[in-house]
Image (cartoon, rainbow, N blue to C red):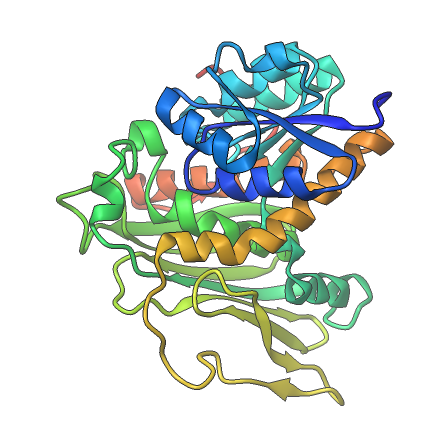
Length: 360
């Protein structure tokens, strides 16, 4: 980039957008210039709070942005990302990259054709605990992962789905707990385990069925190209929620696990079953805690959004790929695509190629 100061924008001024705006505002060498939302009043309030200009979605790129964070509802990501690419702006897109693989492939293709960077916000990869497990795989401490597990056992009030009409709609949200919450842990699982090739899944709506047409509870098994196997359990129907966990065992026989409890708290290593270096910790610390509000969960994750955004802006400056590219983010979406297909068919389904462009 030729500019000494990168001009940043945020489109979509909902819950998580504040983490993006605050990171841009506070990072040296970055100026938060403008924000946009389909609701002008919400954009105005957000702009005042973060010291930026309020804009409509059609006018955002008139501000000469170098990069933009896309924090709009899931199915709108493709239109916003491809428009940003057409204006020469680098893009950091909130997860999931899209709700279907064809859209993800078109987003990747548009950004590559425009020679702009496309990153995706999987900020939990920046937990030190998550990186410690990845390093133990890379240096051979764990060996090739052969067994994995993740649990995403959370609480959401029914009002979470009714407050925003798009939440929990298959057309507007792409799914339920798998697409919106568990995708973070599915991303970590595939980051550790490698290429996924087959999924067997089932899901149901046990608690929020009157408020959402999507699942609030799901289970799955995943088979990987390495021969490794993993299991998944996910729900937003628990009271209180029990946080999230990822556990990996390798060919050496060693295992490592991390726990995020309460939800949004920085994950910690709760199991390090490596010969000569064994440690463990109670997953719930000193006991069960009250379910935090969504605003507190997002606030607790803000430092890791900051690390993600700092890494993304460094990638833009250096002309390199960010840590989590659009192509990388499509891998978790491919696993979800197979999971939803399996739940519908009642049989194991192959994981589709995550980079194959298809029609919408």
